[in-house]
Image 1 (tube, rainbow, N blue to C red):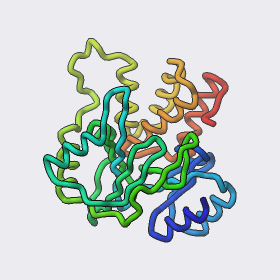
Image 2: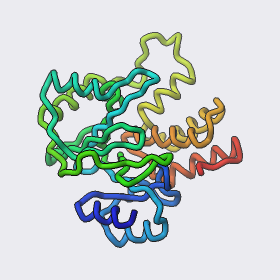
Image 3: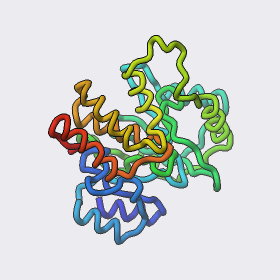
Image 4: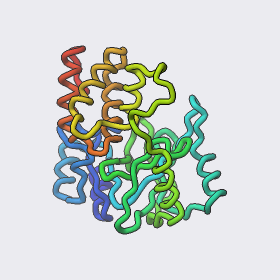
Amino acid sequence: MLNEALNYAKHGLQVFPLTPDSKVPLKGTQGSKEATSNPDKIKQWWTDNPDCNIGVATRGFIVLDIDINHVDDADGYHSLEVLEEAYNKLPETLTVKTASGGRHLYFKLPEGVELPQKIAFLNGVDIKANPNNYVLLPPSQVDGDAYTFEKKQPMADLPEWLTGFILKRNKIKKTSRGFSVNKRYRSHVTELIETLALGFETGRRNDTAAKITGQLLAYGVDVRLAWQLVQYANGNSNESLLQNELERTFESIARRELGATCN
């Protein structure tokens, strides 16, 4: 993996190590916050941990994460077809086939443009765009299945029409945390789901991370899945906690509740 990580860095990508066979940042690191193109740092990471997967922070580009979820009938490929029919065809670009069989489409951001991360931007399509968001690069593996290049070519520029569509849709979908159609149906579970989707409120990040960790474990969620969900909420926050800070908060609650850790 070392040679691949160095090659990505040589081409300007900022990479960092993930736990082997997973999407979780290597313990003891700060995840995407430490992503770098510095070859000395990369050599240190992968010399000490040669089997680590390769994460890349979405800086200077976005990734359209396309997948099919057979549970809720979310078909990202169909959503993309509908979008292209309504606007225009997307240009050919760097494309990675994911371990689950989905696709990652990479597009360069216009200079000075920042776009938000959007989970379920379209049915079956997520947008990875925040500087602390990340995706995996080949030849990383998850559960024994590898990420591979489907189209190994330079990233295309993000089309102007898609930039406008993303920004417009973000304004339409932006809602207040306090909004509810019918408060009779709100519960602690409602608040938990909203926190996972919207992330931690700035100024209450540690407290909120501790709260949802306790709630997830109290509801009997497996500790490893609870850790992934807490990281997911952190990634959806406007200002994410550092990875080591998030680990400390999670492990403090997990030890208290179960005598467990995030490993």
